[in-house]
Image 1: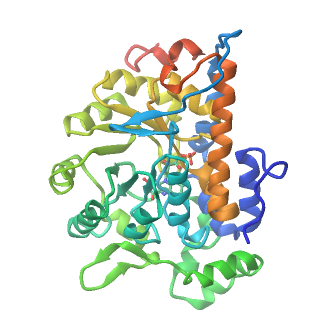
Image 2: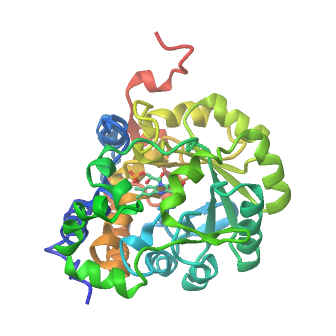
Length: 398
Ligand SMILES: Cc1cc2nc3c(=O)[nH]c(=O)nc-3n(C[C@H](O)[C@H](O)[C@H](O)COP(=O)(O)O)c2cc1C
């Protein structure tokens, strides 16, 4: 039985985070919650929304709000999608399917990570809405081609290629929690870190009932089968995606391609030159290169470089509906939520994800009504005041 996630126990995303922390073993919770190095970028991703001030139009009656947006030709009922979050099956049994089902029920899209524990075909079948596939080149081009072909046949509509993962970022919390030792061959080294799992019997029962340590069924190594969990860091390091890969990816995929991990106008222009239909301004939730700019801060530069030639999405730090409103006002067509729903999944599976979505939806409606704006599609820069320096390109900044 999933724990209750309704009000008054849960009124915001921070409450879901607290419940996830209570239910999950430390190593699993910190894998979700943590970031790279000193976590400066991760914190700044959230804090920066405070720098943008809303400018309401009061005495405007809005009986109904339209939260719908069109992303790559498809209408979504909400202006946010669920971001690719690897290893979701560790958070809750069949986690990727649970999250996809909740997204579909809410009328939005779920993006499945290459590094997921559920078969992509099962995830597609679980959702009644659109499903995108996020690509890493782990295992090399042959392995990636196999996954792309499977995704195409299964009915995934968009391929999201993540470009900010040349190596895995240093997540210091993972080091302290013994992630390397737990996945290593030495039982002796593992023993020291096992108690954190034993003190979470509910999670442990679900984990064991779901087959124990997951492998990656969408990364099928020829002659070997699904890639083992322990191999992921090394595999990522050997599989850096580069611009030249985009050409063959396009040949194999043929559908819309989104480039995820753009932070500068230069990379945005390059992605467009390589044929991307959309970009995600993203720093991987502060999990990769610490010290890069918060995504909301990078958004105006990217929007200006793209100049209407592609759709610009954003992720990073979204914890409230007003964060989404601010990103949309500054030029994002929609946003991706990562931890906001991952906390819900860790707290209570599908109902936890549905609760996270419900919280953000209610926030959005309330914020729009208080702003005096009837539809997210009508949001524009006139509804916000951003720091003046944000409208400068870096070359113009003093
Ligand atoms: C636990 C976790 C795992 C992630 N795994 C992936 C992944 O496999 N592929 C990917 O492109 N991004 C991955 N991301 C990054 C998210 O897609 C997204 O960019 C980020 O979570 C946005 O920041 P937010 O968590 O503050 O919303 C992951 C993020 C988290 C928190």
